[in-house]
Image (cartoon, rainbow, N blue to C red; front, side, top):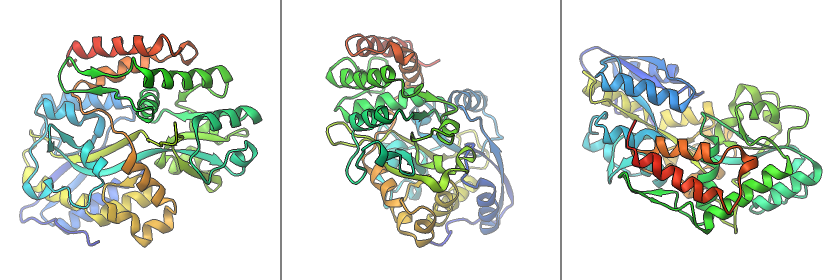
Length: 389
């Protein structure tokens, strides 16, 4: 797992715009700069909100900002930025999918071509504290169903919190439930996609949301979910694998236990988030930037990211590394979740679709199986048909 592939002869300052996570980008930038020798990486941090990151990057990249040489790209933006021509084509050696988790490669692909180098993948899991599952009568030795989770939590009046990591908590929940029910959220890259919300899978998803809201188990996806989970009455939390390293959960981190995302009919399909490293087409240092990307996405670098942040690596081999297993003993659970999870649809119009989902499924108290899926399908179609904003 040697950090390799970085080299160069002329010194070049590269600006790397990263996501606001706990992956340790500054240390990685220093190490890859030292190994490369021909460049120096400076780190800049993007906004914590996906919508704000998108707006900032579109402004910079559409203006051909030369101050963006390497980009930590959300998988939710891959299709849109590829369609807009913002990303430089990958060199042939970086287009290899060998050793990558298929879902990680899929998230970085648009129209059959790998557009960015997969870096990490972050599946959602069910976290519980201490003996909360036992007290609720939930058997965590087998797949936990949504029915048993919600009924068990209701039995002991424990909260079920949903983390709203970057403002996409509602749409993440809906796409996870829909996938577990056998549905297709959105398919197609054009302005008239196939939308599968209005059928039986959509009604099943809405029924679970309706039961949750009626039971008063929590507010649904919320920015303070981790704080509530760490509080006196904290019991269950639906959140990304990396949630355990969040500062707000430091006081209860040793008491947190993960199991796979709750199931419908025995099938666990975790909503996936991910990031890949891309080089903007506007960068004047593409050659050096791609050398740096080779270093930053090496197995050793990804292992460091996993140890620091708790996010899953894009490379399968990293999960077996002893130094990873020591810090992330549930690494196999993350790998299994990443292999079977569901990505954001590969559509350049996903931003519009996500907005429609968020507004049509809130407030949760208004969700009904007969009305919400149909109205949501129409809302998604209307916004997607309107094109890119």
